[in-house]
Image (tube, rainbow, N blue to C red; front, side, top):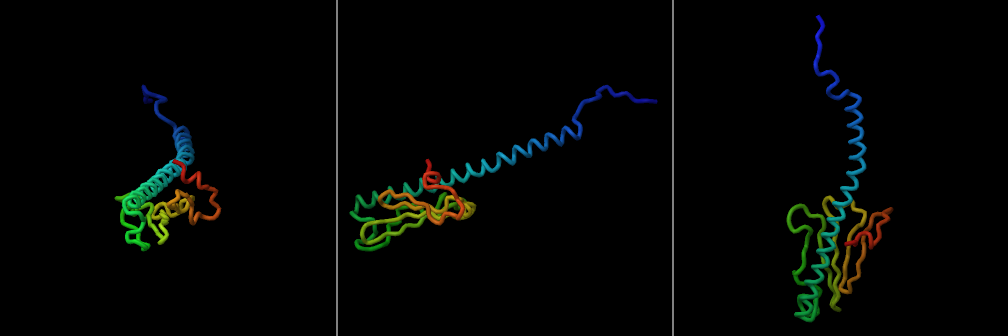
Length: 150
């Protein structure tokens, strides 16, 4: 006795399923690196914002005290700036500041954690507003404008 099925032809064949999986794989291979670059850009943007806000805090201290350093003639900056980005959770950048007795400072954002391999390297900002990339990986085509883009 032969069975008859009422719902013949419903569902997907193995070939159709494999084509769908291949298309999803190709789309993911294109989209994932772009997604990762956007995440890196947002982390770099956080670091540059932290550098700018730290520089503003040091400028406010200078306005109130007539110097960037905590003590007159010293080279120690007051603790008025951010030291890591982000403030909580996994750190992507650590921020350090150096000062000279001639009322100058340099803020440096150093990559850490998942940003260690970032193509932009480390960032620096000084009291004149000069932006720079430090320790950029060899072979990286990123420019200051690419990395500091806001």
